[in-house]
View 1 (tube, helix red, strand yellow):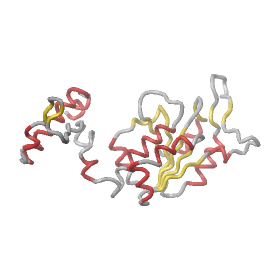
View 2 (cartoon, one colour):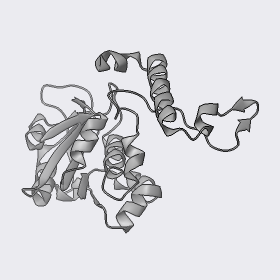
View 3 (cartoon, helix red, strand yellow):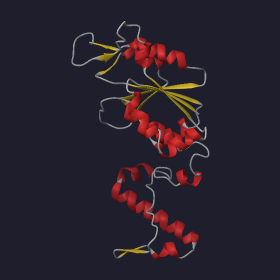
View 4 (cartoon, one colour):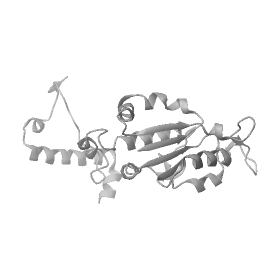
Length: 224
């Protein structure tokens, strides 16, 4: 997979993309991630990328020209262009799975007060990571890349992401434990030490339902 990210602040991504699983995925050539400062595409003598909004209002708005030119320099028939915006479709795990099947993603990070409405015509999909507003699309882009790359073949064990929360019909993941068996009086449930895998699976399903009921009852309503 190839991922191109349009941003005014490429340095923001360095720590996230140069550590842990994302770093290994790039080193093992499972994904190619490129950062593009679309300021370099500005035709303004001072590389200006924003201006005041028509009709008045607070803040500055990203101009169409630099972003159009940057996307058009990258886009192919295999590209899927994603605009990261609070008004986009709420991001969910099933979307991450769908995007992990794509060959080329182009992510547009907004900033400042917003972007020229005509930029929307570039996008195949608009995504929001939640009902709140951030200073820009960089952090949502990091979230999307992390959630998608871990689903690529051979990046992590398939069993690990198949057991994730939200995969099993809107249930949260079951509780897990490791050594020691007793930590400050808190014991590992005896069933997990039994070796009876059928009973363990039944127990885990029961615990997933209990956990979801306590923390995210809205998911159980969707399950029904």
